[in-house]
Length: 99
Ligand code: SF4
Image (cartoon, rainbow, N blue to C red; front, side, top):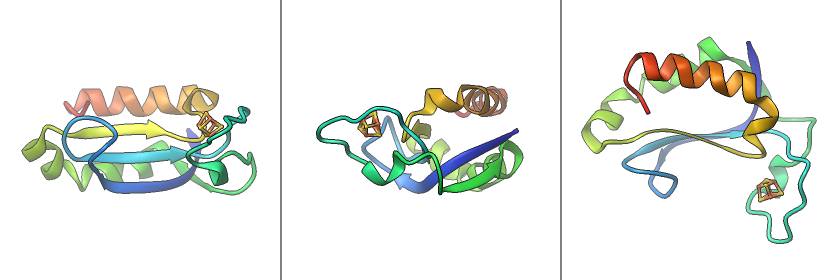
């Protein structure tokens, strides 16, 4: 399955426990007054990526997760707009013990 992402932060420290691989998804229908990521709201743009390719990128950081108690955070944009893609990623990550 393909997802559309805005960007990736590989060593986030403020979006959950430990060192986080943060995936910012592209597209959000909301207009929060103090939007933290306004450039992620447009539905066009960003980059399409397959779940397999994103998993491979994440997997290369597994030692950071293990040593810090970290994992993966999906942000945006609005992750629920790509719920099937995010669910596929969560299932694959959970299978290998990455939260
Ligand atoms: S990207 Fe986040 S902060 Fe910005 S409008 Fe959407 S929900 Fe609000």
